[in-house]
Length: 295
Image 1 (tube, rainbow, N blue to C red):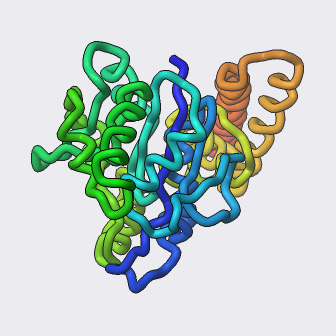
Image 2: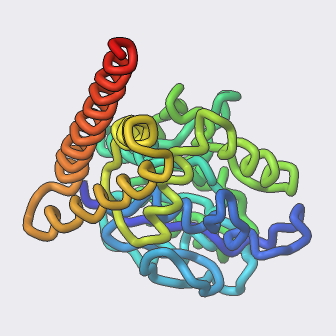
């Protein structure tokens, strides 16, 4: 599906004391980078805001004058797009994921003017939405003509004229619409990713982004391998073995193998080796015990 993305990152963050909100980190990753990771397949990604380092290349623009509000910012970003569908996101969504983005795009590809995420409280979030570009351009042009400019106009002036399909948050991604407007929100997001059920996935994603790799990782397989190496050989064998598995998988992938399959195959071989190692040691221990008993 062909789409462009417009990410609004130029707000004044007054409830955060005017700090550079998109650069604030959750899980050691900037909020803006977390949002960019949710839409890697966008043809063109436009960020409306001041330039800053990002995890992947984007196109920059600003509304005129800066600080004219989200509708003016959306108009500026839309001007830089060409795809028939436009994904519109705010830059402060720490838990937005790719499956939610895909659900919005799929819904927007049907009848109507687009699709909007509906949060757990039943409120539609126009800055977590996918729109038909033609409908956006039409309504933005009408509003600019009617009011003389888009400056300080609320987003509801736009969305009230559009026929949008609501997409409810799923059980798998209940926090997709959670945004960081206050320091309390930021603290809650940081605490959330460190919870037992989230921390490993969040850490793996952070590491992959830091290393510039994008490979599906079967966490359970690697943890099982680490367990077998630690119990069957020695505790320090766990990290060393998983490192060697990664190296072997990278070599296989460089030769044309599927990266995920290469990791799975290397893990299987190493796990089998660890189990054989442990079985041999157990057999020797049993033999020693029998000798001691017979003596």
